[in-house]
Length: 438
Image 1 (cartoon, one colour):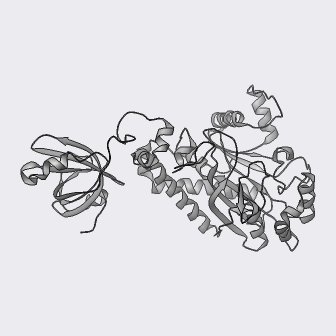
Image 2: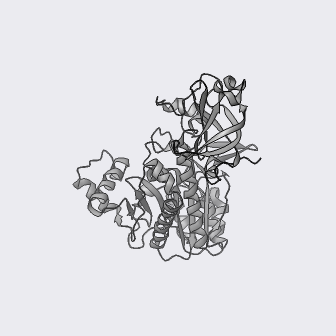
C-alpha cells in the first residue's frame, strides 16, 4: 500500500484503508487502550491501540521511545475528538528507526533551548512545527520570485563561485587554493552579471550562495547566504531598476500570501507588500531626518544600522509604509563598487540605492558604469589594477548597453517578512564566525 501524508488521509472516506508514517510524538497509555500522537510534515494524527485487539505487542508499542519513526497501516475513523478530524485504527504498526534516550533536544516540550544547543542538533530542531513553517514560506517565496522573472522575460543563470577577483574588494573574501592558484569564494556575481549584459542576454537573474568573510557576530549577518541578483540592459536610469525591484518584492510577497496563507496564519504573521511608487529619499535628506531625530555620529555621516532602524520608524509613522528607497549614495560611501555609475551633474554622487524593509537594508543596486573609459578611470581612482580584471574589462571594449541591477539577501527578506529575531533561523545550517558544522 502506498504511504500518504496525514493531510491526505482527511480526503479519504470514513473506514477507508491507508498507510501513514511519522515521528512518535507522544504516548498516552490508559491501560486497556493507548493513544499515539504521530507527526509527519503535514500535521499530527492519532493512532488508537486497543490492548485486547493488539495482543502481546501492546506493551512493546506503548514503550516505543519518543521521536522514533513508525509506520502504520490501518483504517481511518472520523472523530471530532482530534484536531485533524480523524484517527487511525491500526492493523499493523512497525518501527522504522528507534530514537535513543535521552533526546538531545525537545521537539514539543515547553523547555527552551539556547541557540548553540539548537544548531548543534539542527536535525532535531527542524522537526519543530514553527521551524518547518519558516522553510515552507521560504520555498514559496522562491517560487514567487521565479514566477515574477518568468513573466518579465528574465533568464535564470548560474555564475562561478570560485573566482580570481572580488567584485567589492579583497577585505571580505575567503581565500581558497585552486590547483595551486590563488582564488576566492565569490562575494557577489556582479562582474559576471555585467559580462552577460555584454553577451546579449539582456535580462538575467541568479539565486545562489555568496560568501562574505566579515567578522560580524550580529543577528543580521552570516558568512554564507543566498543572494538573489538580477541585471537588465537598455535602461534609461536607475529608476528603471528601482521600479523592477519594487514590483519583484511585491509580486513575491503576494505569491506567499496567496499560496501560503495557512503557513502565515500558523506563524501569526501579517504580510504587507509595498505600494507603488515606493518612496525615494536621497541619502543627504536621510541624514537631515536622522539629525532632526537626534542622531549623532562619531565618524562620517552615513546611514548605519541604528540609522536604518530610525528611518524605518520615521517612514512608518509618517507614510504608513515598511518600504522606502535610499537614493543618491555619495561616491565615498560606495568606494568599493568601482562599477557604480556616478551622477553626471555631481560625480560625488552615485546612481546607487538601497531598498529598506522594516528598518533594514534588503536590496542594494543601481545603474552600472557601461562606458569603458569611465570604468577604467574609476578603477584607477580606487587604486585597482585593471590587469586583475582583464576578462571582465574585455567585455566593455566590444559594445556594452546601459544596464543596472540589484543584489537582494534572501535570508534578510525572510527574516523581515516573518519578523524573526535572528537571520540564522532562516538558514538550514548557518555558517558564521564560530560555526562550520553541522
